Amino acid sequence: MTNRVMTKVLKHWLDGKLETLEDLETELIEDVDIEKILDGLSDRTGHVVNRREELIWIKREDGKKAVAGVGDESSEAFKMGIL
Picture (cartoon, rainbow, N blue to C red):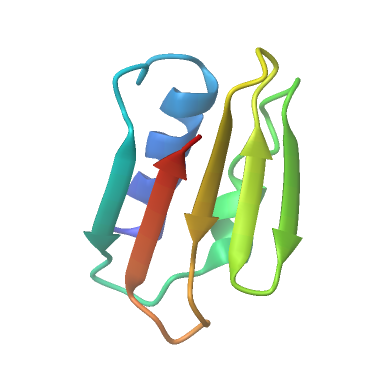
């Protein structure tokens, strides 16, 4: 998976198209660029994104929440859990 594809997955989740998703753990074929991924979500409204070090909390407009662990900038691992 690439940063671009990861952005698409998050957009689908924000749009409510991945309602059966509970956990996602994947290795990217490139280093995680979390800023690029988050910038890719800027065209979506009604959600809140908070970032603290290696974790990102995303809250959708309907109240569903996800936590993503992005590791450091040299990491290729991306983990996300739906709360």
